[in-house]
Each structure stands twice: as C-alpha cells, then as structure tokens.
Amino acid sequence: GQRAPHAGPGLPPPVPSTRGGYGLLAILATAAPVRLAFLKAILEEAGFHPFVFGADDPYPGAYPRRLMAPESEADMARRLIEEVENST
Image (cartoon, rainbow, N blue to C red; front, side):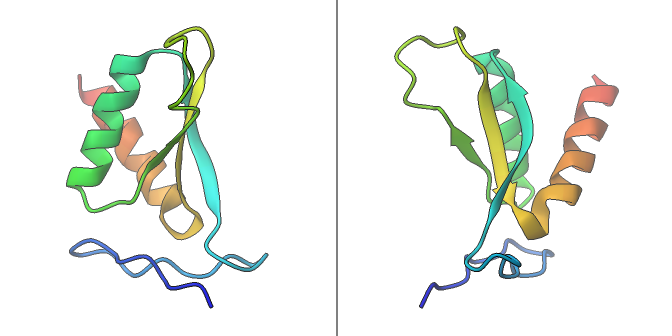
C-alpha cells in the first residue's frame, strides 16, 4: 500500500484522497520562476509538502508551472500564499 507522507510540525497528517492514494491539487500556476521558488520555500518552512509540476521544463518562464500540494493541505497552503503575497 501507499504510505502517508509525514506532516510537518503543527499540521495534521495528509489524508488519503477520495480517489485513492494521496492526491495533489494545483494551488498556483505561474510562469515566474522566482515567485514559484519563493512560495515553495515559504510552504516548506511552514511544514507543508509542496511539489512543482513542470519543473523539468527546459525553457524556464516560457510555460506556467504549477505549485501542487496534498489535498489535505491545499486550502491552508492557499491561505498562507494569499497572506504572504498580500503582506509584501
């Protein structure tokens, strides 16, 4: 079977997707590589488990990349991104 990912401090463990496994949801799409790296680092520091879909694109910035998060973390991750982007 599939093991649950480890949750960071203060976060509940990710819960299985309703479709089976541990699903990822897109929480942001951007063609700005610096913004993407910054937000991914913020989420990791907060104990989330982000994943960048499209990171192997040979032309950085040419196509939007998606910042993904486990379904169980997606809403909180979106709120954190909104808070960070509105405070700068």
